[in-house]
Length: 447
Ligand code: CTP
Ligand code: MG
Image 1 (spheres, protein in one colour):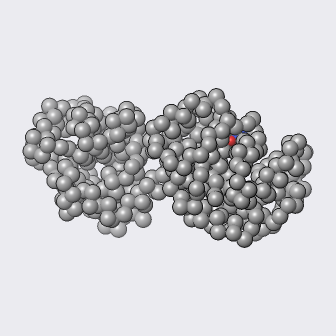
Image 2 (cartoon, rainbow, N blue to C red):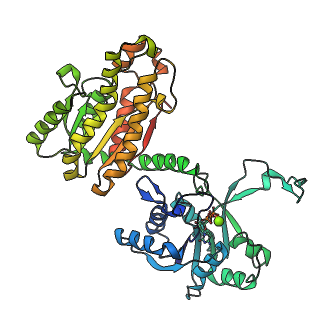
Image 3 (cartoon, rainbow, N blue to C red):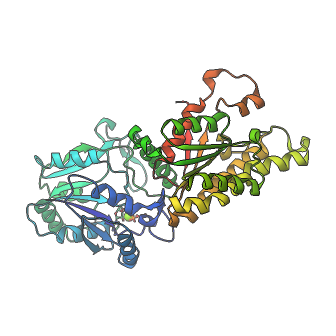
């Protein structure tokens, strides 16, 4: 029998949030839920043991109530050190022939293929570690911070988890190390006492440990890549019979989205200034969505690709023009979300808004445009949290320069291969709508 032991009893002091990092949310779910999901869905894992920080046990128990995990076997209070938590986990198993896979809860990107390699290796080895080649040169220093050696990088690896053992071997290692404070990890104990060879299988650069606050940005991106990659074309069949309203749907990216969704059987409705729909007017939006609902009895997806791009120095532009741009590019999104939410609550539907790559950093001549796009991202993050209890998902697509009529109007002709094609953006948009992502900014690049 294979036991997955998830170590979640740390305090996450380096991560520095109110609650330990295992309770931080990525893409709408806590880190601990993501990590359990990996073990829960693994064909190799029979039972899961979670070792949790005692003072936060009640939070974890609430998480258990909300999920339908079937393999959770024990929830144990952890110890003050990782070694102790690991010892508590292995001591709770009596089955002498068990295999244990001890994993850091803070590594939610563990893949099934690594678990597969570990379990296969355990057939011929009593101890297995997971590691990747070291990309930096490693140096060894003394207590005065002087280099004492530079090991050959080709022989160096960076350890990850899970670390996997025959239960009897790791139990023995812990017994022999009861009073040893120089603990690095479970494999270290085996090596120290020379109990058996520790075989190393290849890890994955994506199997990161969330440690510092900035790791959450990388984690968000890794989830996007993973979630969107898991949308397979057969999922496009889910569009059949769904109702999609696209503001800005008569040209550019919006038009491509409408065409693609219609091809897969969605009922589509396109609104744009060219057919008299001004998104800076809240009542018009409400009325258009009410019309759609009257005709179809449901709304599943509401998308806003409409926007205006005005370039110029703030001092040179007139105030009416600035007001109009902000009303369309920012308030238009606020209004569309507000008007759409009551319908989407009924269908657990999705909202998609659009940013621009300039949102991360303002640029001269684009002051109002870029700042409205930054505001849209912030709006979406906030609303995604507000809407999570209703299971409405909201994301932002962030395409790089795209060949659209809006861009042509602002810049004229540009080399075709320097621009992203709107079809590619439409495809990424549909993949996002069909994924479980929420509160994310999805970057779409030419390559
Ligand atoms: N861990 C544990 N019990 C402990 C300490 C750590 O179960 N007493 C777990 C953590 O929850 C984490 C994993 O071991 O999933 C790896 O540890 P680390 O990244 O160091 O997490 P923390 O100890 O929580 O973080 P920090 O060291 O920054 O306080
Ligand atoms: Mg720690």
